[in-house]
Amino acid sequence: MQTNSKIYIAGHKGTAGTALVENLQKRGFNNLVLKTRQELDLVNQQAVAKFFKEEKPEYVFLAAVLPCGAANVAQRADFIYENLMIQNNVIHNSYLNNVKKLVFFGSGYMYPENAKNPLKEEYLFQGDLEYGAYSFGTAKIAGTIMCESYNLQYGTNFITLVLNNLYGTKANFDFGKSRVLPALLRKFHLAKLLNEGNITQILQDLKMNNFEEAKEYLHNFGISKKSVEIWGTGKVRREFIHSDDLADVAIYTMQNIDFKDLIKDRKSKNTHINIGIGIDYSIKEVALMVKNIVGFSGELIFNTSRPDSTMDRLMDCSKIHSLGWKHKIDLEKGIQMMYEWYKNNNGSRERGGGY
Image (tube, rainbow, N blue to C red; front, side):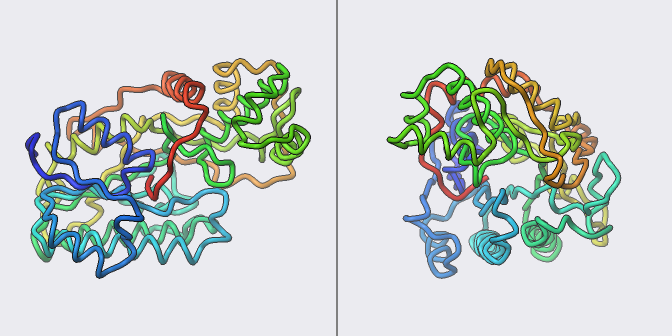
């Protein structure tokens, strides 16, 4: 991949896509193809076919996704339909138009709910998926197998990177759609503002005009000036990867790892690659870390009447380590980076479909 290579980033408005664009530009790549959903609906088969035929990208980062979040169960049909269509359209048209290389992003939800940790690539299909993420995980498995199958049948060079929880600057902080860390950070930030009596910034953050309505809204999410409520016991353990590390490993993969490095014979499978930091934290540990970084002096309350999700999610990253990549950003540093961005930008930015 050369600095003038034509590179398409699908989902460039998401957390991963934004980091990819910024990292590529910093490295001197100057021929990036970026399309919003209004400009190119990746669910539309005809539109995607036309785009690839006309643009002829050489390299593709497939970060476009309808991401799972708090609404996952309620939107299970949307998750499987939209993600399958996006994956099918982009992967198939990459093959038809001779894309040199594609990097696709899988999810830890692909692995069985009760799989032993750390999660190894060969655990795929070894048990039932987590119920709440069943449709999303199934779609991601399909995309992973599609990349592998096209490589085996057509000789393409499509590689899947599988991650757990993503966070970083320019994340989605919407309580209904955000991932664990961005949601926690915003909760503690707003609780701190309540504690300080900073009404102006609270209303600005929430984009509301009435403080009483704002307090009621925050109360519904367990946020007050004295405490922040978190669902579950806090014992669930999660692994987190910063968006800059994700961009770094995706670019590293595009430049240094080929499908031939991952397969020994035509019967080989599980050629996807886990990525992460190799360390997990309990939600309680993460919450306390965020609380300290934000500077909230109130109480942390765990609502044990609410259920915990799958207890542990930790990637076995030995494969990507053996291929020459390791993460650079530890969790505490990453949270500090995210909070600085949030304060400077009031947590708002244009969102698009993407990780």
